[in-house]
Length: 272
Picture 1 (spheres, helix red, strand yellow):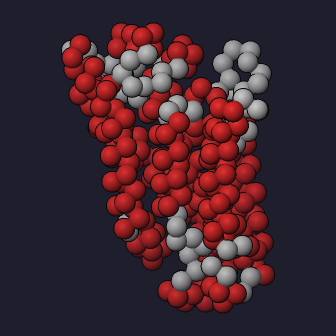
Picture 2 (cartoon, rainbow, N blue to C red; picture 1 turned 60 degrees about the vertical axis):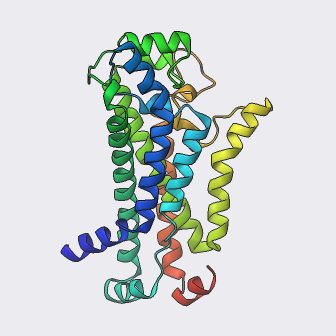
């Protein structure tokens, strides 16, 4: 168990992690600057639930997802050091360990993103579980640099909305890792990244072009503006979103384990 924990820590804390942290801190600071400045000018504070509104922004969520994909750039973890681990534990157990690592990373990345969003918006936060006048005013006047979803504010308290976003971000990060991991076991890694890019950008392009719905990709569900509120049956509700994420992750996990049993290590090394 100690060996597994040590290997997980060694995989997680790397140059990739530091790069991701720098990108997220810069991105959050730039995105939240208008909100902080407006709040300080008005001498008002509001709930800590800023991340759900930030993720409604086209550029923010794309950078957020693509930086997470870059974090998993070491999949499918087939380096020389891992070869000896496979010889000791076997392919099946090694595969389960990889899936577990991806899930833990998804949880940690979501927690880091949530904490950073709160820390950077701290001058405008009072940790209340009620939507205050600051969010209400910005929602009406379209100020503060946030795309505030009034329907989400009416449906959920700040803490509950933040909790749902935390879970959905976790599942989205895990799905990114599992797509890269599983597809890389079948095809060269570049195809896995191409799939991620298409799934991240295509819905937005289709939606902006007006040629179809922009909610068919799982990665579009991190935006609260794509959730169902009331009787809008064209959009997915939270039950559908959670179920779809879990099903896709489970399906990819099964596919990766089946592939591992019949794969040759050296073939995958030469096919990167």
